[in-house]
Image (cartoon, rainbow, N blue to C red; front, top):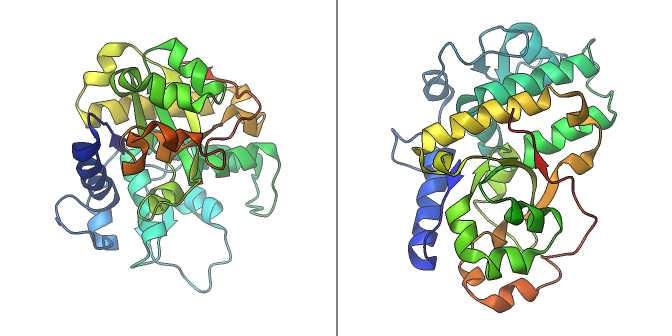
Length: 273
């Protein structure tokens, strides 16, 4: 999902419209949970599991002992509970981010090749954090990425507000994050990947921007260092993004240390490969 902001009033309206476009089928015109049939109708040749098998959204089976990632790898079946927004958001992420979701599944298999869903470790922790709460950030101005990496939230989102709106784009990847944005709460924090991009890319149609970032995120996940530490994901208080909450139109909103906390420097901008 791409959320782009210009002013507070229109921004709030666009935030709702943008969420609806990303979190439900645009063809339905409603906020109802899409059916499995409707979700499956949006799949094409791009949508494959990490094993290369074509994916399909299926309801849970009580006799299936395989874990989610193992089953997706083995059969291409993406277990999706009907009428459940969390699972529908996951399905929509598969639809919108096919390369990245495929790579997440492939990496889970590489780090738990025998389907040991309980087998963890740093690599799978990073994958899970990103899959659940990932935000993919496109940034055409290095100084803004530096402010983000340094947890300098008020300077980023208030002092440099105009530049953030012009030179950054924020794309929701994580399906849990998508659900949280329906009922946002103080302190809501995403796990962000920040990529340096050319300014022209920020003016592509929304679908083109997401496709470009999908390719970048998938390529990043293939790099050996990508899953080496959870610090590769930058904490980002999403309600501070200009236009994502009506209260952030006031400078004092960013004085709330409970939301906009200092912290250890994250690893900053990643490769655009």
